[in-house]
Image (cartoon, rainbow, N blue to C red; front, side, top):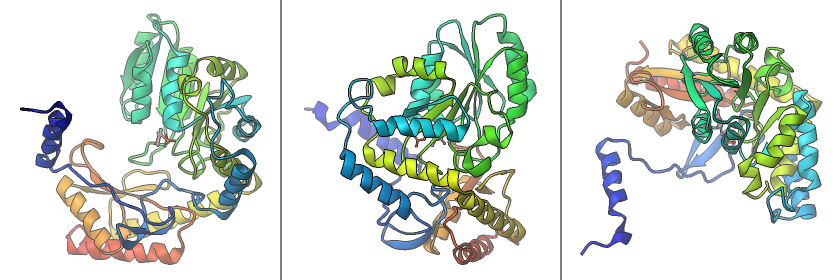
Length: 396
Ligand SMILES: *Cc1c(COP(=O)(O)O)cnc(C)c1O
């Protein structure tokens, strides 16, 4: 007799993953997230984290987290709208608004939550959301939660965006254009000046998910909007606190009206407990450090340029990245995964990314250098790329 608790419907799907060759175990990290780590029991150079500034294990952030725990405890005990809104949450929002040069910033538990909560709160039936085709999964999910209609334009193709805008303008009330600031698979930057001009021409609103621009682009990591000098011309400027900033959380900055409305309608904030004191303490310290000095972003960019030039001059195809995200494009899916596996055997962890995350035939390993890597570590990793690249006939 079959037992419903055996979850056979899931076991069949898992068999399907195995037959397709895409079943995998999660790698296990046994150290802090840093430049060199112990992964699955082996010491490796880490080129796969989003910890751009090396803040995840930074002594100043850890100290601030511990101090916040000592004063405010381990958890907040409630959602913000009941009694989980501490003075440290409010102070962090004020600091983020100042950092981003906006009127207000509204904090969420993650960038994913920020997209899930904000997009549905600021759109409704009769509106349309227009999205770049390569936008992140959390934007796609956020759009699904909205009752607005949806449109898509070809990646960074302004003619395609304008065609969708032209068609939509008279049919809908509000139009919201959403784009990633930095696209995570290729490391290219959205054409924000053109997007903002088109938005103004068609009286559309704009929303930028700057998860990979936060702590990376602009003065001291203020993001893509600062990079292009577009302050005041993007309505919803979403920032991430879990990648470059090294901890956890997300926020959207913009106007006071935006803040007021979200504090009444952002469902992840209304119905899920607020970020704990340790996170708020550490993030506040991180933003303070960025406002004091550009040394962290300077070091990140110095390392990123060093890595790109070394890897590029070996003859690898690094695509059209404009940021520290450096894809090394191998092409064939199986070959890409083998390349990643051989790099790991030789002490370098770089995750392989293949279809369906990227188009078929464009498999790549995605290298993410951080401010924390030393030149010596980068040189060692370059030597491994050269050795494995030659062994596999990727390099001549
Ligand atoms: C990583 C990422 C997110 C989610 O960030 P979390 O803070 O980890 O939830 C959202 N959008 C983009 C574009 C991302 O790359």
